[in-house]
Length: 237
Image 1 (cartoon, one colour):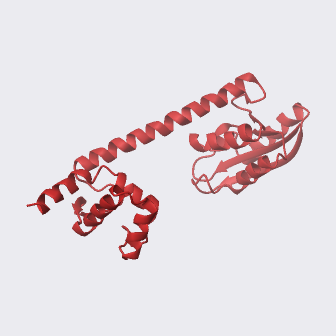
Image 2 (cartoon, one colour):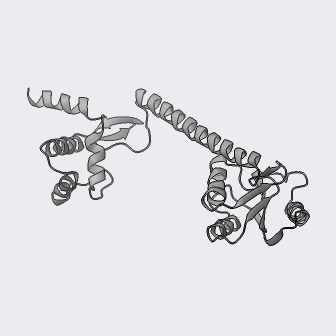
């Protein structure tokens, strides 16, 4: 069995008891030796950032996993990989699920070659989905509350701008929304509507060109319905 070890230590917080890089290195080496496996590589990572995407040693291991260069990854503890549950699930998916490579976390007694270890992976996946949904639901709630109060939420959508943190209508842009609705309702494709706007040198929200997806987003948005209806009534006197 060809094993690779990974030890991670963040400089942003206190060092866990008995888990500095040397401790992890020794713990992993002893574990692999006791089982008669071959330790083909040991990666020591001193983490100086909280950005999960800037761990070069871990990235090397993920690439090696894709090339099937080892059979099992051994770590001292799960949080030595990452403290972010979503990032942990991504790592596990890449190593264990996509590339069928084992994972052993010594302190937790997690071993994916065993049924209990495979069950633990499923639980991590379930928790990740729950966490993603929880964050998504909470984000929608906050955005809805801000919109109800007329407060600023990200970039202003096409047809609006922010003044004193509140959305204010931009008539010129709303006229473009009306044009998009009319052309699309007449049967013109999103691509042709985008070409029409670009040919007329009508800029998108950030001054760029229009694409079919941009037109589709504006056309399908429920935001404009009541406003365009009101504009129509005003125009009809």
